[in-house]
Every structure is written in structure tokens, then in C-alpha cells.
Length: 223
Image (cartoon, rainbow, N blue to C red; front, side, top):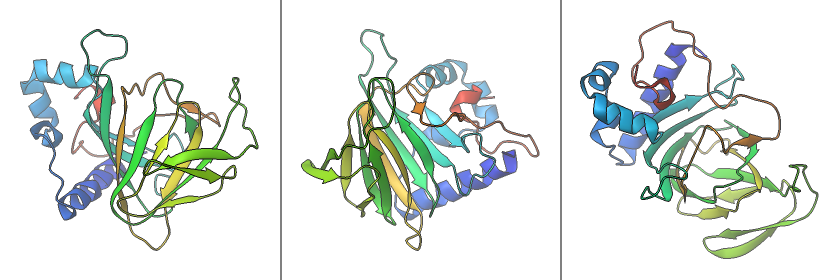
């Protein structure tokens, strides 16, 4: 993925946040120079995996398989006194897939905050991560909702679903509905160790530097 693609995705994400009146903390707008000028804050943000994340999951097809995230708050797994919860904003474009994955530790609520419709598909897994054909039941706005494996669940703005640990899921924006602003509220999040993809893919993008970064990504250490 080229840095120019990352920068363009960040500009689109900021425009969507502005459209729906979502303001970020000050460090959400920091440049590399700002991170360098605030080393203590930068170390805190990096340790807590806070800030921007743009990924194509190693696909080199960001428009079809990719995601923009901003982590607003998070703890550190296993550290006493840390937050036990996390909050993210996600920007999902029409038809843009986040590939099938599950979490071993994290339970999360996915909330359609604004924009188009978010489509999510689920499948149960056995203890070894093999996909099962069983129906699944997920709480939609708190009420149980039964689905066949991989049956699409459409979340219109305002609707939410709870995804329990171990449940495979993939999602994308419904074609024709425009980009989706998604909220994620979850147990503490660790993107280095708690994403188990059904297919062998990368969690973070390999970035080719064809122009300077607009905003450093959290996994780049604020560089």
C-alpha cells in the first residue's frame, strides 16, 4: 500500500467525521513533528495502541479489502489498574471488506453510528478455529437474533450487534449506501495478539513511501 493511499484514506475519514460532527482528541490531528515534540505522550499513545490505523490487510487492494480505524481509548492487557475496555471509530467504504476473523479475548459491540448500512456475516468455530455450519445467535440491540452461518445481518444507522469471543465475523459497507461510520466498544483491545484470521493475511499494511505521511499510524510509533 502506498503512503499516498494511506493519506487519501485519512483525508476521506476526516471528512466523514466532520460530516457527522465527531471531534477527535488533539493528538488525533498530530503530525510526525508533533509526536516528536511530545515524547512522553507519544510513548503513552503507542503503548496503548491509540490513534490512526489504516490497513489493506496485505491485500494491495485497499478499496476492496481494507479499513480505517481510530482508537480513542484502550488499556493494556494484563496490567493492573489499566482500562479493561476500548473504544474505536471505523470508516467502512461501500463494498470494502474487513476479512473474516475472530478474537480469543475480546468481546465487542459494533455500532452503526452514521452513514450507510453495515453488513456483517458470522460463523461459529470449534476450539481449533475450524468453521462450523451451525446457526449462530447474536444480540442485536440487546435482543437475540438467530442467523444461519454467513447469513448477512444488515445494521442500519443506530443499530448494534454484540460479537462474543471466538465468533468469526466479516463486514463491509452495503453497495449504494455510502461510507459507514462505525463505533466499536469492547473489552481491552490488543491488535498485536488477538486477531485470528480465517485466511493467512497481514493485520497491518506494508507501506511504500511515495510521499510524506499526513498522520503517523499508531503502529509506526509516531514516526
